[in-house]
Structures are given as C-alpha cells and as structure tokens.
Amino acid sequence: MRVMNSSTAELIPEFGILSGRWAQYGGLGDLPFGAMWCVVPPGGRADTDQHAERELVVVVQGSADIEAGGGTQTVRAGQAALLDADEAHVLANSSAGEPLVTLSLYWLPAGQEEPAAGVGAGTGQADAG
Amino acid sequence: MRVMNSSTAELIPEFGILSGRWAQYGGLGDLPFGAMWCVVPPGGRADTDQHAERELVVVVQGSADIEAGGGTQTVRAGQAALLDADEAHVLANSSAGEPLVTLSLYWLPAGQEEPAAGVGAGTGQADAG
Image (spheres, rainbow over the protein chains, first blue to last red):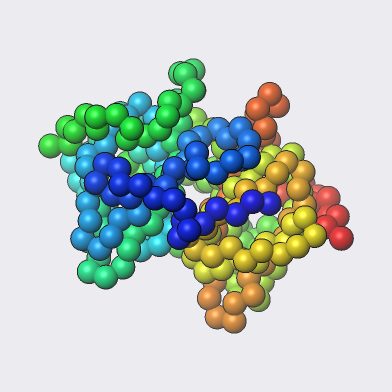
C-alpha cells in the first residue's frame, strides 16, 4: 500500500491554481489515468481548461464551483464531477475561508492515444464564454 | 458535466460496509476503471477484501484506517491509498462520531482482461492474517 497526501505533495503554480501532479511519485506502476491534486485558495479561480482527455474531479476538501456547459455546479467534498472530452471548464473556490482540494483524474477516450504529459499543460484553449 | 454524489447514491450492504457502485449511474460512457463509493459508519470495519484489480482508495470524508501488508495506515480526507493487485486489505473507521466515505477506483493491471462485475463481489478470500 502506498499513500499519497495532498497536504505534503509538491505543488506548482499552473493555470491559475496550484497543481500536484502524481508524476512526482515514483513507483506507482502503470495507471490507466493521469492524476493530479488541485489546490485552490479561498476566492481562487483557475484559468479555463479544455483538453482531449475526459476528466473526473473528485472533491476531497472544501467545495468547488465548476463552470461548464454554460452553467455552474457546486461540487462538495464527497461528490465528483465527470467532464467530457473537449468540455471547457473552470474550477473555482467561492469559500471565504476554506481551501478547495480536488483529485483530478484524466484519460483519453478508448481508442485514442495514451495520455500526454498532462491536463492543462498546453495553452488552455480558453473558450468557455 | 455530470455530478455524482455519495450522500444521495443508492447504497447496499456489501462485505460489511455500505457500497454505492457507479454502475447505478447511466450514461457515464466508457471509464478505464470501476468505481464505487464506500461508506463506513463510526466504529465500522469491512471484511477483508482481496482481488486481482489494483485499487485506489480516495478518502473524501473522515478518516480511514487501512490494514494491508501487515500494518495499518491512517488515510484522511485529502489523501489516497494505492493497493496492489491481490493485496489483502481491510477498511475501517475508528472515529467515534464521523462517517468515513471513500471513492474506490479499481482496474485490472495492463494486459489482463476487463474488470469483472466489481471488487469484493466474490467470497472475499479473507486471508489478511
């Protein structure tokens, strides 16, 4: 058993928030998805993200406001949001005091190539408006 | 975007705890893993589980005591535990008052067949010592 901890992970500023990509962990073996912790401070808001991978955003602390498909849904700890391939989305934390932490998993739809370096690594292709 | 919520999911008693398998959600498309919510009441403890799939246990509420490999690790909300294929494990909640909720993802290692009906669906092969 191997335990990964968002509160001790190496986080880097990336697309407007802090991300802790699981590539930092050695020895995890072959996973069928890419994974990263996302940490959004109170009042924080990520850049618009859009990518070929499907994405599962698992909220593990706090509450996320996720903008996608022309609307916004609040996704709390104990909930998860599944985004389609190429679905533009914004991750925001409207809390006044509590950080938002998610575990985002991403993978290319079946039949496509293996995941590239990771979600959000490109230009962002911001087009949520 | 599709939101799945552990607090409104259909839960069934299974291997000593409550599980909410994501098979209950229609229209999720092809996922590279099986998924289920696991809910363990305060003081609860699952049966020993062991299966060919690797498993990622993401703690989304409360704190888990996971027994595996001859030891026990406490895994809190904001942390995740990766179990190897065929690694016997027990999920327990030693809290006096707070429920434990996890999202467990599971998949067969690369090169093996597609996941069967699900983790823990069999006899359990209890052998954790």
